Image 1 (cartoon, one colour):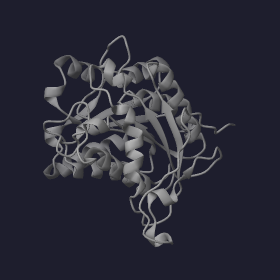
Image 2 (cartoon, one colour):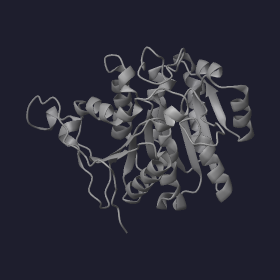
Image 3 (cartoon, one colour):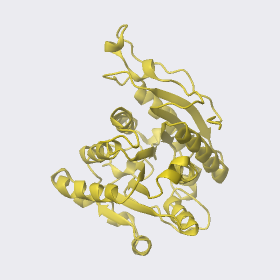
Length: 322
């Protein structure tokens, strides 16, 4: 079996702040290594440089630069212990979005079959259909058939447009799951009512989507948020966590195509990420919609990197008793 990950741009050297020798000064750029195609453990970063889906959805281009900005923000983050981290490089998408999603899917499958936790760095939220294809084709999906997709997002992304975009990935995967007769659950935390039409809510209800609105995801709503996440985890065997940075308030995440007027506090989003990453069910995660051209003082990139850091450092591998 091949664990090769084919990308358009191989992993580049990492660099960042160095305070001295030894693991007491350890940072991401010291610990991360190029991905090797063999069974192993730990997180592997896969870039998905795409904003074609955002453009098709009438959004602002720039998210194709997201993977590089996230890597740069991660590089100097301190690690309190040495953990296996690797970088597989980047899938680069021009106008051929569907081919790029298929390539990402193959990369995610290879990483999963090698025993790694793929963390995909987007890119617009069209990344989701590529990540999903990778999970669906993996050996893990055969072992753990009940797939759960938890989307931290202001939008359902359930559009029925004939041309795939950043607004269609979860409609696409719902159709794939239905056609295959497989068991899946799609839940969204952070839905903004003003950002989703009645037609989208109707589609969500028809597909059995469970969601928690952004105005019920505050710090004071911790108990309700925990119940929502725990109910989701109880119903599934395998989790795909996808984070659209436009779920966060615009003051925290200005560097997205559609900044949130309200948004979910970063404390809530981090708590959800912690809960999922330590559940023993997380198979893959991605982070979407960072647009460095629109960012202010790298706020959005730093916040996204912080969430990636938490997931990678707290992840409990599949099947490990909690």
